[in-house]
Image (cartoon, rainbow, N blue to C red; front, side, top):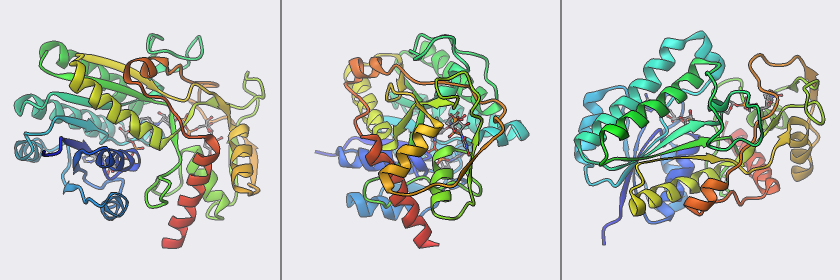
Length: 341
Ligand code: NAD
Ligand code: WQD
C-alpha cells in the first residue's frame, strides 16, 4: 500500500523538521517546501539519518503562487498540508511590518488557493499563544477571547486564523486545524535536529543554552517585579517533539472526522517562571548559568499558560515528555551545534 502524503511548508525549520521526522516514523510520506530563509538544507540529511527516508524537497518561496501551484500539481495525491512557513521574530516584525505581512499572509493565501485548486482536503496551521495577548483568566482555553495583536507578527497569526475560517466556510470540502503553540523548547533525542536561531536569540531557551555554551556572556532576565508568585514571567514550555506529535494527531483526526474547522491549544497545562526554568535547566544538566536581572522587555505579558484539555479529549494527544528530558535534549543539541562550528 502506498503511504499517505503530507506537504509541509517550512519543513526545514525548528518545529517543521521535528514534525517531518514524526510523520515519517508514523508511516507518512513527506514533501517539504522551504526557501531556507531561516534554516539549512542539511537538515534534510539529518532527517534521513534519523528515519531512513529523505523527504522530497522543493526549495521554493511560498509567496510565489506559480511555483506553489507547480508543486501542488505534482503532489495532488497529498492528503494534507501542514503550513509552518512564516517569519517569526516579534521585534523584527515591529521594525519591518511589510516584510512580515507579505511573507506570512501571501504564503498562507497561496497554500489555500493551491489546496482548493488541487483538492487537497486537510490543513494544519501554526498559530500561536500570542493570539491571547494578556488574558484576564488563566489558564487560557480555546474559548478565551482573543486580544488585539501587540506586534505585526502576532497580527499575521490572528489574520491567518480568520483567513482560514472564512475559507473553510466558503469551501466545506476543506478541513483545517489551528494549533496554538505555547513555548516550544528542546530538541530531538537523537541530537541531530533542533532549534537554529540566526544571530542573537530572541527566545529564552536558546539564550540559556548559548550562555551555558559560553557563546553569550550572560543571560539577562527581563524583569523580576511582575505580579506573579515569584515576580518572574510565567510561560508554558512544551517539548517540540510533543508539538510535532500533535500535528499527526490533527491530520489523523481530520481524515477520520472531516470536522470543518477546529482550534487547539498545544501546551503542557503547567506554567513555569523564568527562574524556575533556569533552575530546572541547571539541575537537569548539572551546569551553573550566568544571569543577571535586567529591565522588563516591552510587550511581555506577565503570565500565560494553557488549558490543553480539548486537544486531549478530541485528538487523544497530551504533552508527555518530562521537563528534565526536554532540558537535557536542548543542552545536548547546543553541544552538538557548537561542535559543528
Ligand atoms: P523556523 O523559522 O525555525 O521555521 C520556519 C521555516 O519556514 C524556516 O525553515 C524558513 O526557512 C521557512 N520559511 C519562512 N518563510 C518562508 C517562505 N515564504 N517560503 C518558504 N519557506 C519559508 O520557525 P519555527 O519555530 O519552526 O516555527 C514554525 C511555525 O510555528 C511558524 O509559523 C511560527 O510562526 C509558528 N510558531 C512558532 C513558535 C515558536 O516559539 N517556535 C511559537 C508559536 C508559533
Ligand atoms: C519567554 C520568557 C521573557 C529571553 C515568543 C513570541 C510568541 C511565540 C513564542 C512565536 C519571557 C523571558 C526571554 C531572554 C528573558 N513565538 N526572557 N530573557 O515571549 O513567551 O513568546 O516566542 O509564535 O509569539 O512572542 O517567548 O522565549 O521570548 O520569552 O528573561 O533573553 O523569557 O521575558 O518571560 P515569549 P520568549
